[in-house]
Length: 118
Image (cartoon, rainbow, N blue to C red):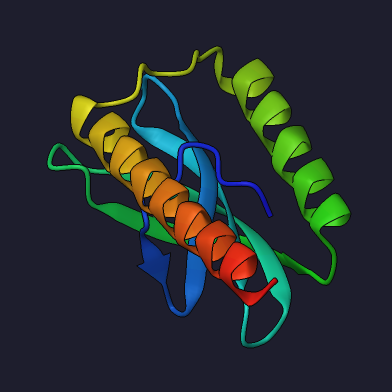
């Protein structure tokens, strides 16, 4: 599963893979639990310090269903509440960049290991 806006946050065993926050500090998250091989989309409220309270989860068995639900929930909420997506906080952007560097370093190490094994 590709990470988009991922911060490395984990909630009750689910890795937050993608999220969107609206101007009213509410939003939605798409998460995956690798040990249970289960996906969830949650609604959440984010406080002024960036802490999220997750609720109203929809649990599904496939990424396709989870992404469809995530997209539909976002669209429906935006229409119903006339809100727009809030720009991402700098700290979240920094965390994502650090994660990308870590993945890049791990990939480079894996490639070196593969070449060495040949």
